[in-house]
Amino acid sequence: MKIKIQSDAIYAASDSVVVRLVENQIVLFSVESDKNDANNEPYFLNTTGQIIWQKLDGRTRLNTVVKALSAEFRTPVKVIEKDVLAFVKMMVEKKMLVMVSGA
Image (cartoon, rainbow, N blue to C red; front, side):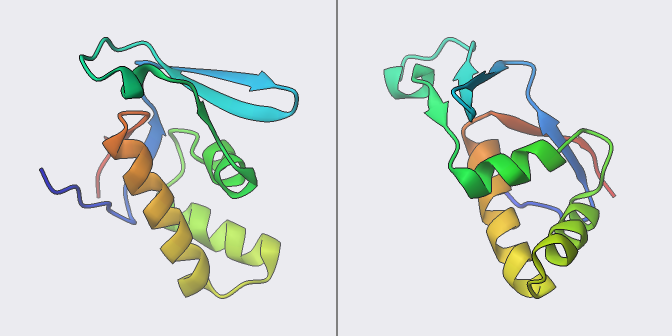
């Protein structure tokens, strides 16, 4: 199934993910049982992923997150948007993020 990320939608952590802070690093654990053991391994977010993850609060539209990050890091919106959309797509595919509200 091809996943399309909507920049005007709202995304949040899935009910099937447990989020922990371990030595100042965000670690995600899937509690959803899966035949593929790789999906049950902890997922460590890199610095960029952590910054994006913390902005995905289930209330803020993705395009607003992109604009905020663009201003915060003084980086063009298009550059930030590319990274954010790629991150969100990967997290949706891993069932760590879900869309809670579309446009």
